[in-house]
Length: 140
Image (cartoon, rainbow, N blue to C red):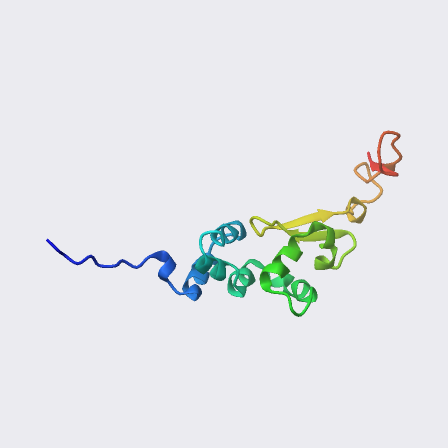
């Protein structure tokens, strides 16, 4: 039986645009892992289409600030840097950055910027110096 074997289409045989569409439906971590599979997967996983989907719409202006020649993957990674994330929110009392693996938004709020509707009652903030703290004053 000399039956001719049919060649089956492999996942790597798909066009890079089609792979990029599928990879964009995953997470940033999975997209990075896909880049290690093959050169075809790397081209798809590193495409702007994939990384554009991981950048939240409200963070697009901050991602665009990073430079004109940057690709979307570099812009995403720049938004994941907590040290430079203060520019994302524009508020000195709140820093926002993206989790590198999941793309989730992370927030750090300054306790000094918080306020309560009652400022003089039993439940009001009291900032006092504490001898064992590395900060000048702490909430007590």
